[in-house]
Image 1 (spheres, rainbow, N blue to C red):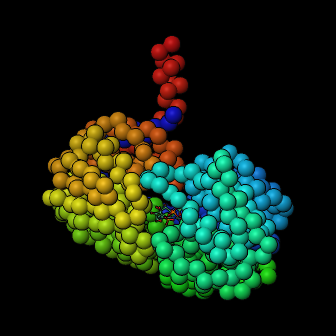
Image 2 (tube, protein in one colour):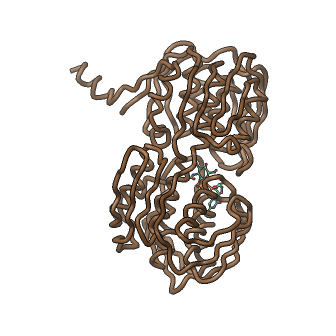
Image 3 (cartoon, rainbow, N blue to C red):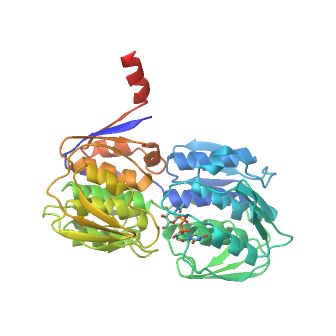
Length: 429
Ligand code: UD1
């Protein structure tokens, strides 16, 4: 098991380049299954989630060629199965996009129930209802294999009774080649939904309204290939913005879409940071003491749940009492126990956490309980007095490319220790 070792107390100063959006990439790669020709995807983040979903496509028969660190070419024309049996599929939440993509291409799909970060029940009932509305029969067989079968997919009017990113994307994937018009109401509006729609439209799809809560998809006979550049990662950017503000630093965060960061910017400013916006960069600095604020997570354009743990670190050392309300997931406060090990004064009651700001955090051994919780541990370690060791960093590496290098370049004292249990064993023997 690898770990990060961080000596806190260094302000971050300099520039950080943001990579492509994880959540767009893990939807757009499976979407290439629908393509009729080669797709070239640029600005992909170099993270394990992207590597895993690319391997899954290869297992299905796609030819995947790495052109460089951030570019893949995918030729999906030789995919000849609608069954994704590989073990990798079970361990990745976003593998549920294989359902929509395989159903859209073959009219059938066999995909095991997805894994991924655990923060409460993560059902896929809305995805299945959407597929059924398009004419598929959906069944979850014993062992958790999801089976979809259809004679012909036909456009339909679908209302999501919960705003779901995954269901919105999956319904788009299944409807893009269905016969006639699909109208999806109460759709999610996240930037990566717009990115997926733009990608599919660049291959010849007819999708309108992505980014609003009504999306209209007129089915087309076939799709071609495309060259497409993924949008910058809103959450990676937000994480470094929070780190810059937490350390009282001054960091130019480049290759971002400032509009996607507005809800994060608003909270950082409320906490006493300064945020300057440029065309494709934001500069975050802080010279004033950290204040307090309340935050409630909501679907886009609300404050993103995937930034909740990182922001909470600032609240843990803010001046006063802050209340965090989690409005998306049932159980997204597991990291609070880890923050307490570092001296935070926080309590959790269901979907609400209360932070009484303390003067300082102190280094301690902690765990990354999931991807964004891990990012929060890094920020906490950067401002803590002394040394913090973070375990279970595989969660972090699912979603942050070159995080050690990026942080070291702006002055952090962070290193990765690889396979330390093996080291310890050899030392003790
Ligand atoms: C995506 C993101 C994840 C983020 C989440 C919310 C990806 C790969 N992951 O996850 O990082 O935290 O959006 O912004 O993009 N729900 C149902 N039934 C369903 C589907 C969802 O009740 O069939 C509920 C969920 O339990 C949750 C809420 O809807 O309470 C939102 O979930 P959803 O937007 O679907 O999250 P994901 O797409 O899984």
